[in-house]
Length: 248
Image (cartoon, rainbow, N blue to C red; front, side):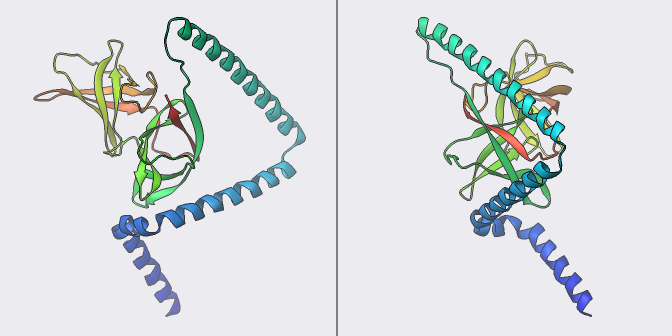
C-alpha cells in the first residue's frame, strides 16, 4: 500500500508540473534558478578535482598546450582587431568592439517544452534581447522572464530575428514552429532556392551580421509573401554552455 501511494504521489506531481509548470515557475524561478546555479558550480568544482586526480598526466599536458595555442590565437585576433580599428579611425568611423561571453544552461522551464531553457548570466539586462551562439552558429535568443534570463532556442515561436537568404541577401525573419524553423515575410518578387544558406543580417541589433543559421530545404509561395523552411545548424539537443552576444 505504501508503495502504491508513493507511485500515485509521483504521478500527481508530474501532471501538476506539465499543466501548471509556468505558473509555479513564475513564483519560484528566482530562488530555484539560483539554487540550480549553485548546485552546478559545486558539481563542476568536484568534477574538476576528480579529473585532476584520475586523468593521465600526459592528457593534462596536452590540454595545457592546446590552451596555450588558443591564447596565442586570441592575442593574434586582438592585434588584428586593433589594426582594423586604427583603419576605421583613419576613415572617421567608430571602433568595432564586439563581445561574446560563455554562459551556462541550467534547466528546462517545463519538462514538456525543449525550446525554453533557463541560463546563468549574471550581467543580464532585462530591457535587452541577446543573440545566442552554439559552435559559431545561431542557437536562438535570450529574453527576460520572471526577472531571469531565458533562452528561446530555434524552433520556439518567439525566437525571432532578422536574416538574409542566399548570396543575393534576400531579407526575411526567422520564426519557430516547434519542429520546424522558418524564414518568413520574403517579398514575392525575390527567389530563394533550396540549398541557399541563411545568415543573420545584423539589422536588428541582436546578432552580428553573417552568423550562420541554416540551409533552405523548402520554399513555400503564399498569398502576400514567400516562406522558406530551413534545416538549422544548431540542433535541439541542449548543450551545457552557449556564447551570448553582449555587444555587436
